[in-house]
Image (cartoon, rainbow, N blue to C red):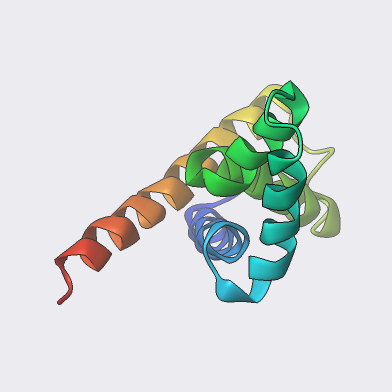
Length: 113
């Protein structure tokens, strides 16, 4: 099971990865490609799901923290030490901590002049 230090590290990494994919200008071009793709067939459920995914910090954050956690567990050799249910709870914890950081960032961003 991951410790509190690893949880904090993964939460910060998940927060930053989420900000990168959802908000940062460096990925504006790929996001605009997806938006243009969606605009050509706005009735498509798959295209709407893609838009929802890339614009939602909760949705994207969930998947990105899961990927980061899985990579961390595999690289550090911790994947096989605990049952899958433990890793599921770790995923919930990391995703929850990362989204708290996103919420704090959103709130503090609105308070700034």
